[in-house]
Image 1 (cartoon, helix red, strand yellow):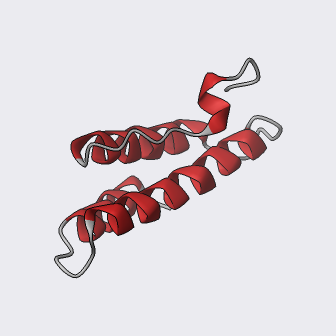
Image 2: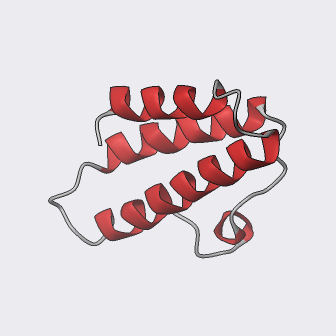
Length: 82
């Protein structure tokens, strides 16, 4: 996914008045988990642009912080993080 696409998708979720704060956080967390999985796969292949994925994760983390999310992936605290 293009970084512009992810920022548009994030903004669409954050700005959606039909979603509760909890629903927004859940959707962004799901996107974050997918990006982390893609980054893990990228670390095993030279064919994937992991810089782009890192940018996506940064945008997702920033949006989650703005929403006041305290959730973090279990991987973020472990020794086997990226």
